[in-house]
Length: 383
Image 1: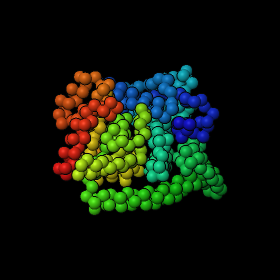
Image 2: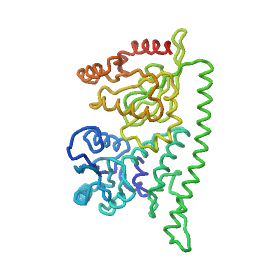
Image 3: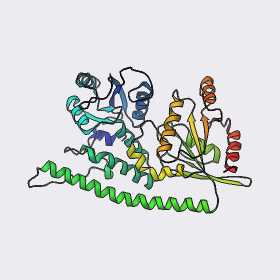
Image 4: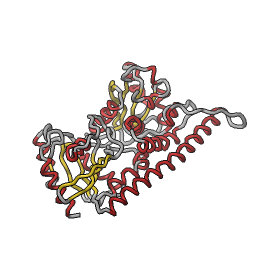
């Protein structure tokens, strides 16, 4: 069931669509930018929750310069949040930001229900969508990195890692049973992480050998990158005839899909990669760094943009930020404006004015694909 890691070991007793309440802190000016707590960010958090099988009852937003160190939103707003959660029979509170362990503890004590943050939600979605052993290893490493500093005596944060609830352990001596249990949990997680890192290193070496073979054969590589749900997999299918999974959810693709394109005398590979999102958890960036190397080591990045997105320009900025973080900022880029068949024409025009060299296409209908193929071939020949 989606969201089971977030809801803890008793999630199976809940309904098909557990209910969540959102909580956010917005700058005092209340501007609707793309920062945490903004309308754009909250809309994306709702979409993330829906992807994870959760139903959103409502949201509580606090206007203040920075999050309260104790309760994230301040004592008065916590009372409002608790009342809303009770009225809506919510199973979960999701914060639009990353909470400290103390904030989680205090919010849970005041609301009486499970409290998680945006990072935990994204990690849960990644865990649900990882299909290959490589993807599962990287997701579990990210989960462990997130959970280690957040371990508590109730064991709830252990409900998903390792494929189920971990043994709590017990102990006697100068430390109480709770402390000994936490030490056992920490040791178990660290040992598990060590084994996973060894597996990840071996998988990374295999990818490196594959890339080296392509380089020796002088096969140029193109990586498809962009914001999550921009239509990257659909574009890969349209360009190559592949059958990569296409779903209207966030983070449908976590595992790279590589296909070869041959046009006359020109041959190159094209790789579909994981999508990005605002405030992408650093644990995921670290864990998926070897996979993201597909982008940083490619000869050309095909940056796919959802022309339907109201904040498409902000999404482009987010993707560029992540690309720089993973060392792919200098990779040549071809911007592709996807979904022009359903995007408002004035939005497409505005994006084209902002990025004159972008190529408008529809992966669904095939509009603009022939020109994109020609432009791709021109760019690859110049490499």
